[in-house]
Image (cartoon, rainbow over all chains, first blue to last red; front, side, top):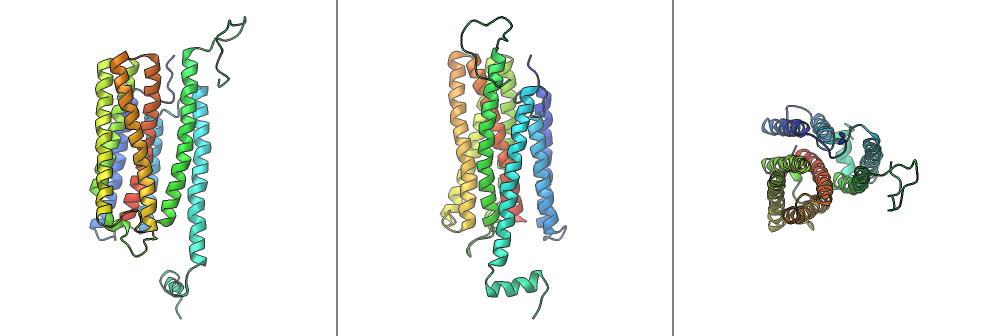
Length: 127
Length: 206
């Protein structure tokens, strides 16, 4: 009767989730530490930011599966998953949308002196 | 599955009896929907932080303020508390009262340690003049991390009440159901913290 679903894990699943989470946390920590101690030259800023976000998402999936048992079987587990997925899409729209819009706003509302610096540094346009 | 809860009346022939397990499922589903709305609120706070993180108003940036080893130990403490909480709910289901109390008590201690570290970081920042009034970046930082801290504090109060209830009345069905909800809440806060650690601290210092 106690099927595997939301909040119904096993010792094995909790242990797996715990070990995976710890490893992912330590991995991303040492990656960033290496980057800082080497004087910010190992990999590009954008690549490292992407790696941090991918590792955080990996840990999200690990914890959803092994701690929360979101991917369990049965109709109640499926409904939990449906609510999660629709919420996740709202979260993505809020976060990515805000960043996108505000970056464009900042770009278009730049003051004259900032714009000169920006064009020279980021876009390679010189007077 | 998620229809109206049954009234206490005689069942008609052929009608399906809603058992306790079904009702528990519905309670869990309702609580899960609450957690998802909470997630939308955290998403708004994350979006605010992401937009404002460079608006330091001449003040210090994330790289000058945060210590990575400190944030890492906070993360490991919260992760371990999530683990002990999960084991606690397993022993509660198997009916082992003492083990349940022991595991939830360790979750409580770890959660308190985490909250104490967060508060000490806050007071350190404020004492150096880098409070939430300093810049838009710090306002969004204190709002995001402070909201998470408030959730942790609420979870600790809830956990304390449930531990006392186990001590007094044992592992009743009602306590077991509440422990399940608490464990969902606690795992959820752990997941939110993973993103705070990654986006605020790690991306902040690189």
